[in-house]
Image (cartoon, rainbow over all chains, first blue to last red; front, side):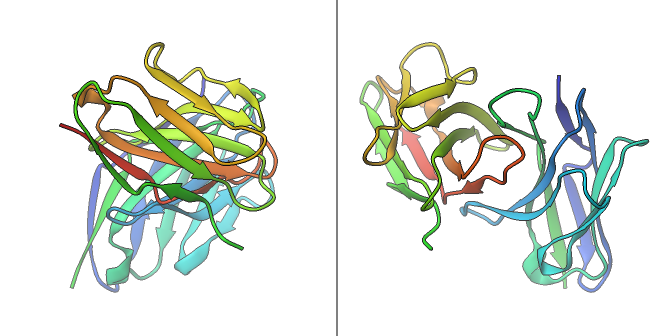
Length: 115
Length: 114
């Protein structure tokens, strides 16, 4: 079975400092992994996606994530936080073994950015 | 190219009423997924449909919930005889292909059951 664990429910950083949101996954197959962001009362926006190509994935708004198979991790990073980055972030794995491609979401990490 | 559209954005129902949530996928997308987000939780898969077919409904509650994606028109998620526990945000996503394909999400419908 596939699962995703986001290790921090809440992360607080100061504006201009690095961001690290941690994610571990469990998968019996080669997974597709995603990070989505959700701003308050809004839908989900795709930040980046890993599908067995380069292990370092660059996304929008300066975010990137590194796929580490040995550690079963897919942590999200950004060198310098901006106030507009404050949101809920979801690490997601695709249930690629089945015919459905349904997504399995982590519990989410709330990122707070302090001025 | 318009994104995934959902309506209504907000829906208030009294216990026992029916709720109908609509989702129009992105142009060229024939795969639709419904997810539910309970307060303070991540999204949970409900059902996956392709035009006129339900492919996977393993996440749907056994009673009161149904979904369809007709040949013409939007996908509909229907909840009969709503209860307070149905209060949640319901998100629709669409993709062009099935597996290994990015799903694009709509803005969601926030259902409140009084």
